Length: 128
Image (tube, rainbow, N blue to C red):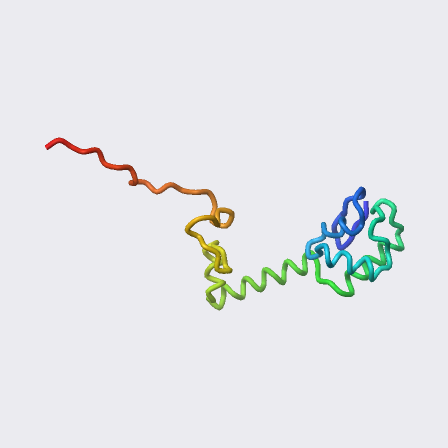
């Protein structure tokens, strides 16, 4: 089991796929890291030597912000938006989409489970 930036990456996967398990590294970043470390992207993680793992770690530390530090940065940015009461900050506070998406329909992931509002049933006609 190889550990990179505090994350245990899966042994059976190819290196360029396994690196995407680290928060802050996507497919493009993964390829950039592997080329900087001069490693074959199709080699499996279990076949990496300690030297190759350390070269990957050095490439990540040199060029990328990942894991806890990146999460702290993102959380700080959102906190700043909330503190200055910007529109985006108020949307974050209300747990609503912040980038202009519609909320009349959709946005279920952000808004949570649908709640039915009472009083929508038709009233029965009464005799007079």
